[in-house]
Image (spheres, one colour):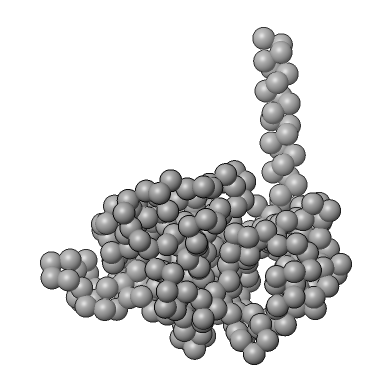
Amino acid sequence: MNKTCTALSLLSSLLFSASTLAQDCNRECLTSHLNTYLDAVAAHEPAKGNLWAGFRQTENSVVIPEGQGAWENVTGLGSIQRRYLDPVQGQAGYYGTVKMGEEEAVVAIRVKVQWDQVTEAEWFISRKSDVGVNGTGNTPFDIETLRATLPEQRVVPQGERMQREALQAVVNTYFDGITSHNGLIVKGHPGCSRYENGFPTFNSPMREGMDIGNEGKTDCRTQADFGVAIVAIRDFYVIDEESQTVMVSAVFRREAGEERRRNHFTEVFHLDTGKIRDIHAAFYYAPEDRPVPNWPPYDGLFPLPAAYR
């Protein structure tokens, strides 16, 4: 009995310490670390990023040594910049664009802060020339539309905010709607919008008999034939209660026999009055031999069974 009590007490202490550590960095602290890190990347100088000794970074699930990848290719932040903050988890998110020479790429970035240093960075990078869902053609991409549709940073009045658990639950209804092929599950406003790398994927004619209350047009609640068996590995890495914004990464795992590649993405959800207002994604189509997302505890998803590419 004493041993059990001691073990429980120790576990409680460890959980309390971990929770306290994650919340030691408030919104101002997270903003400072995120900006320091982004400036260091743009300057090609990892030494200025305040990186932890065990710092780890991936770009489209590939581990990148300090000084390579984005550290070499990014020449500045782009014309579209949004920052979202989650002091509870000690994580910050950047969604928008970065400059890569003459090109502007759409990115979503997750940055983790612990011990007053940046310990992790996860990049989702999409370029106009990236391959499409079948490994050929081009990926959906429209920076001008992204610029015109991405909401400005905001502070939602305290009395109009949902708690973080509710924000996550509402966003999960979107993924449940995809896997169950039932838009009635999705808690979204009629006419809610959805953009993939800025490219609109809504407002097309609904098939007869499938309208769920948007005057015969598709919206974020209605799903096309994605060939998705499950929306897996949902990582709600930023739940920004102040702006009522959620950044979540996940993987579309395809149905058996599907030729379309897995889609690894971050989606940014803006919510109003308990429902989804708009969704903006940054994503890439992962080659068959790539371990996705390549972050614990899911770093072992390789090689993949042929039926679940």
